[in-house]
Image (cartoon, rainbow, N blue to C red; front, side, top):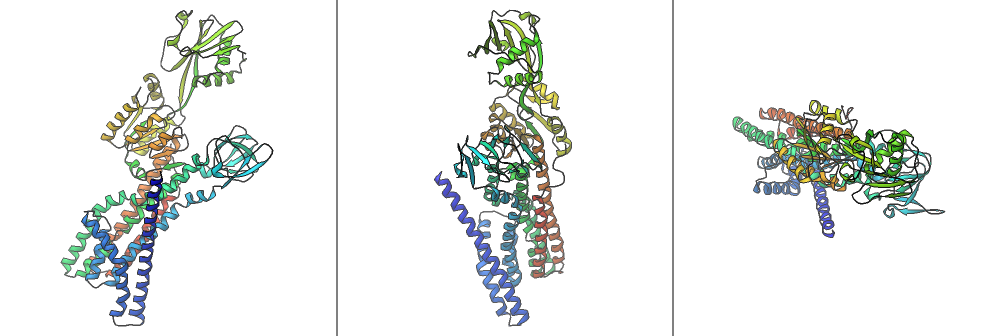
Length: 628
């Protein structure tokens, strides 16, 4: 752990030294140009004197940049910045010193501009970081105590005063209020809070004080997850230029070819330099990272944590969508949909007795029975004995009568009245026995989410997906039932985590895949997919495996991510390709002798500014972020 911290510190120091060096190069280059203009055009001195500050700029800026590029060439790394290196060397050899220093300024100043633009794109995240309180008010028996945020623990009781920011995720135990959660959910609503309501760290309290019980330590809260994006973004800035490298692979040789042809055909080496100066690919080097980080910032505002910037680039290319079932396409909360009763008992009595027994169970189906009991307003029975013998279901006694809730496979061999039990079907069920006589069958279904079907239906028409699958560990009858409900034809049921990985890998070999899930058993499949999205925070393991974590348990946020990814790619391509088109126009003019090297350098600087300003649009939400 200490080694990891030391390595991070070393990387931070190295990055800081590089930034300082670039600042010094940019400042010295700028001052050299100003001094040159004064000596040459104002004082009109002999050319050797105005060139001295330019030579100084070459010494402290040009030579280090050329050495770096030389090392890359030795490693056979032909990046887009190769053009800038050729321009600097050519300007020095041809005596166009001013043009060379302008290129040095473009490279070093462009990196400063990138830092400024990325900082602007991450402004929302930084504002969130500044908003987090540093103290919390602990509620004691008869008083309150201010404690450091680091001291807040699960189970601790806190008070939140009017207009304060909630310091931790929790549940209201006293008071009523409204809270502004727009910073966390992206929805501009004031949410009412009463006893039993959950509150989110980072939300702003309204006009009333409330007391909460802490459910998660501040560092484990939703707010902290969003803050982690800032650190992740800072760490990955140098590595998220994959798209730029792909475009540069075509742009760089073409630009060199145009420059060589211009120089040979005209017989004027100066035209070669003019073309190379304009070809310096700052839109590629700067605009694309700005667009990506701006999109990461926008995702964080929408409660979508982007852990890998490349996922934003890749999601637009995904053609196969793979979904887990329970908790992803369904609510993960079974509902009691069918009730079958024996003619030997009065149905209302059977249900009242079964529901009264289910109050003592933590089984997921018990919650569904109790929910139905609330709707029916039943007459609760007081049971004298309640127990849950291993493998025998739930057992209780009401007066002299016994009641047992179990599965079909666990029915005692001496059970009477089984001739009235309905045939077994797909789905979940439980059997109710009274005095060891069959009394009722309850059948449950895990209902699909309201948005599941429209979301899946629109994937092909709006996002270009060619194939949609459900891969689940549940029984085939359950998975097929859900598939019919949501409009999916291809399913894989009763899959182990290992089997899920095999399926995802096989599909990924055919086309890029998007996997959406929420459980621990989904983590390996998420890692095998091109892009893995964890919906909700049901599992820390899943959140670690996924490249994208949607912090709200809804598919609407998945759709938002798809739109942000597509828009990011569009803006990045607009900035890069638009900048290159303008560069090619400038190269054509320069090749024909219409632009001198210095004029070409200024022309390219204008192109850079336009490209970066356009890339900044990615940080701001469009009018539509979901379309189903």
